[in-house]
Image (cartoon, rainbow, N blue to C red; front, top):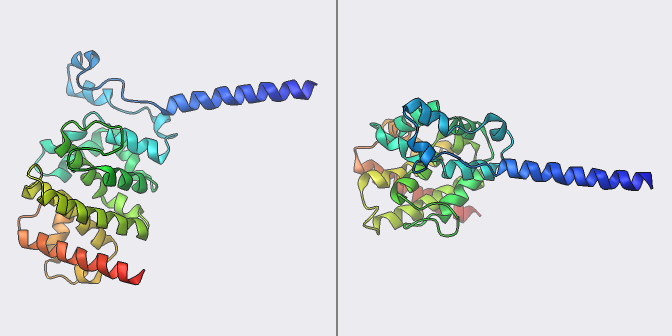
Length: 246
């Protein structure tokens, strides 16, 4: 009888601890632009501190939860305030611990790709995230997926899945007047270039424009439209080759 009661107490305590942990991991940014608390912040340092994720929360997050918090990050558009998108991302990386943690993980690529595939030209199709400032938000997702650490963490299958989705996104963008701009399209092309570089695609490696594409991967800027066209062509060749080998 004693053991029976002991087991009951154990399962009650286990349930309590598990539920507490689940509530803890459902953490969200309590102070964000538009709230009364945000309006009371007076300095940039206060605003930066307000959107830091507690370190004990970060350490316990699953890959899916970490991606959820990253996609709902209140200051996601901060990268657009700098000369280049990558320069902006480096500033965000230096200021906000969520990005430092994201790049340190090797299991977030899959959830990021799934979110990217769910993103249409008007917003997320099924994910329950905000679609406000959608153009900027989609560029933000593509900027995350372009990071070297993210690309290197992907499996070969995930790299093929990502570059295939980026190729589809390119076609969607050039058919949509809201996205049909050269700078906006470059976010997508950069993903393709990053994957081709990571897999060391022979055609990409041997390109006469290798130095230009390397700078493009590093900075996100590309002045020569012909090089973007070449990356698209090499992407098509890479995807077709992979499909034929399957």
